[in-house]
Length: 218
Image (cartoon, rainbow, N blue to C red):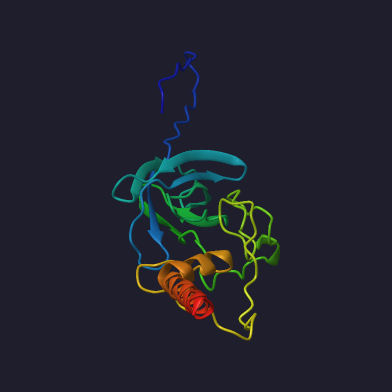
């Protein structure tokens, strides 16, 4: 106890009361993983009695914290502990726990924490509203190409009919030559074979006329 002044009157008896405080208890805080029991750092708790907070402790790298705790009763005193900050990756322990500490004796207080749930299971089904309507841009501003239309073109390709359009099949062109129709075919025929035939016919007509002239003169 601290020093204090005492006044003594001569010839009288003066009573002096000296009160020695109780030795403080030693509180050891531990924070553990509720599944593995591994000690966790970064857990902050308040320790107090009634409505008064007496200590604020934070576990270190070894997952523990130690401090003296004042006790005012020989037989011990009740205290509460509340966690105000959970270790990284763990949920806060929201309940309040109580313990009893006695003068000059150590007492261990343990708080357990569960890992923060990250979610698991089957992924949710896709939302039908997320499927782009044909011809409308999707979430990436990409517009799908309609059927029958080439990308990057405004011209729609015609639909091909597999049925035959004519009862006759086109005559294949000779190797290295192009097919010709109409007037071009006539010119081709004259150049290929029609010319000699016309020349032969003209010669026959001239010979016949000469015979007729010879007969007349005879």
